[in-house]
Amino acid sequence: MFFRIIAALLALLLLASGCTPGAISTTVPAAQGDTLPSDVEKLVGPAYASPKLQALVDRVGQRLVSRSAVPGSFRFYVLDQPEANAHALQSGYVFVTRGLLALVNDESELAAAMGHELGHITERHAALREREQRQVMDAAIEAAMKSGSITVGRSVARDGLLKLRSYSRDQELDADRVGVGYLTRAGYRGDALVTLVHNLQRQNRLEEQLLGRATGEGRERNALSTHPGAEERLAALADVAAARQPGESGRAAYLAAVDGMSVDDPPEEGFVRGYSFVHPILRFGFSAPRDFRLVNYHDGVLGIGTDGSLMWFSCKQGNIEGRLDDWMRNKLQPTPTDIQETSIGGAEAAIGARPRGSDTGLGQVRYVLIRRPDGVCYFNLLSDGPDRDRRIDTLVNATRSFHDLTVVEAGALRPYRLTIVPAGPAQTLAARMPYPDFKLERLLVLNGVDDAAALAQRDRVKLVTP
Image (cartoon, rainbow, N blue to C red; front, side):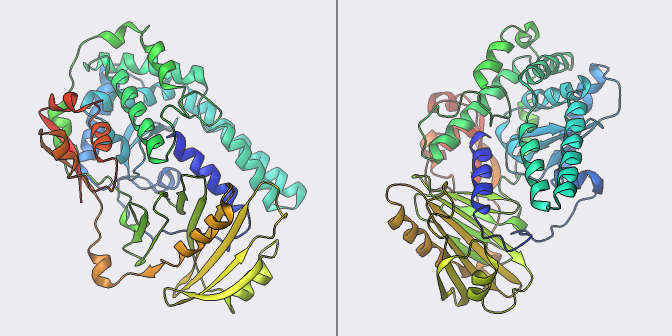
């Protein structure tokens, strides 16, 4: 989604400010399923270990292919990722994420998402993008060799891949048109892509609310968009006759399949719980300021404050020799100022400030290192608002909440799951959602409706439960 992409870019900028001890990850190796070949898994991540969901997406995908007589061999998988997304490889692999399955409300909407991705394959869009990606990586390798700098090569790769992150506007709209054809030939309702786009639009608006932004901000197309804007897609679909064709929804079977599915990050990557982050495997936790939203990525956790302040947390396995304050003094460039040796959560820690004037694009920056038995964890903190001096102190104090979890505390942590329940009063259902705020808004988005009256028309509804 739009703001997750912005968050990732902000995290890259913050990491570039200096404190990067090495290859970083808050992840420990997860138990791997046997459904994805290892070379494909390296590209897209592990599949979600659910035979029931795997059977669902394979059945829907093969129905699309067979009834439209699409030439070639195709494989369909659920990825173990909480973001709502779908993508495809030209080799015939089509992927949907757990996050998308949670947002989808019936089998026809799932078919719409998969039909769109099939459209990218059959129209050769995926092949073109894969070829362009190889060209970017070749250019990056060449730049690194000519300059003798890996940093230069990474910069070239990053810039090139950002430009290729999305298909072109025309390719996306073309995949919509082709996908609706596959959808209706398979017997599904033709407006399923329309309702899916509306669901994604609701999700985007909710994310804007969660990040404290005005509703509607970021809805226009721009350089960071991964698809044309929702309004543009809906307008184009209005001209597609097949999008008005009746057909099956498959709601009851779909809800039965997704009942009990995880809607959280895998335990190996830790859980966001309100403004706190806890890791049941590595057994630690911390809390951000209460106005922060935390986003959990594979390689770290990004916190975004309502004033634009940022917190990036990650960990690195392996020992840092000597004292942490000496490492910070001798290894980071530019050398931090006001370096302090301290203790956080009973462990050795060090805090340093980025020198003023060392980067014209940054305000107050702090680096916090915390030694762990198997490596080091760190926070990069940035505040650039009018209250940045006080705010940066608040962020540093928040890092002092970092602490170990007991075996009992870690063992009690479980991923949130999707539960299908009978319909009832919206406020009563919303009160059961395990979130600190926006309970009703989250419930409505989860069920693809705009208000409580529309929710009351459902016979069964989706709920998130601990």
